[in-house]
Length: 313
Image 1 (cartoon, rainbow, N blue to C red):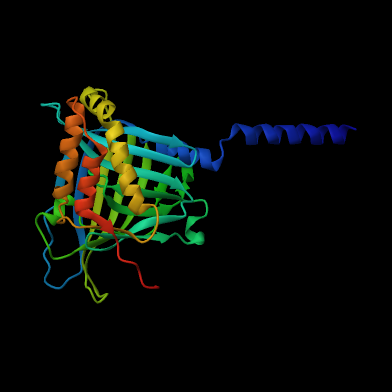
Image 2 (image 1 turned 60 degrees about the horizontal axis):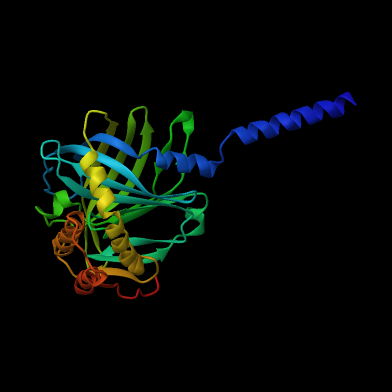
């Protein structure tokens, strides 16, 4: 009788402990949600290993800004975070990048050629228990995706992606053309005062024949530190006014990115042909004007089309 009672006590204690601990899925979700908030951000990019004969190391890049991360969607297996920049002097708001997180996503888009992203299935071995993060341009155009698991060794929450492709960042394609793609591993880590985004980049010139010439490796470090000293009210006001408009824009992108073959942009690399009209429409909304769905459709009809179908890989 005593043995049986002891077994019941142990079982109940074990069940209580299990109940007290959040599930892995919930823990991951909470880690992603921890990236929301108000930050002072420092951006740093340094070329490290030089791989092309005769290549000279590019100057280090340093910049920063005041950035708020707003939750757009929140469910147990999907979180959407929108970044907004605020100029401290003028209060001007710039819609910045967006990150979507999906648990065990069936597919993702991959940068395959200039202005082209193919939608491809994610191998089960990569996807099991993993989160796919997809990152989007200021116009909500695609940039890159990565898939990986959150880890909590020694109490440190860290997500590391697999190796993926992305186009040149805005800081590069306006001033150089000696490479046309980045092979990247991304790592996000929660810190006591915010979070960090590390980028392990290899700059590569990809040829139409499938050749690849590695130019240099680069380490990128984005440091998000929480702040209470910046007035982010202009950003919140902007998003309150324009969230419905940008939801419609995302819906149109999802029509291309939700399934194969993917999307091809007819704009130049800077994407300004879409950024300007979409930002202008958003400003009209904020100013109290009406923007018809047909006006959004017209921008997409002019600059966006389906990617070419892929041959079997």
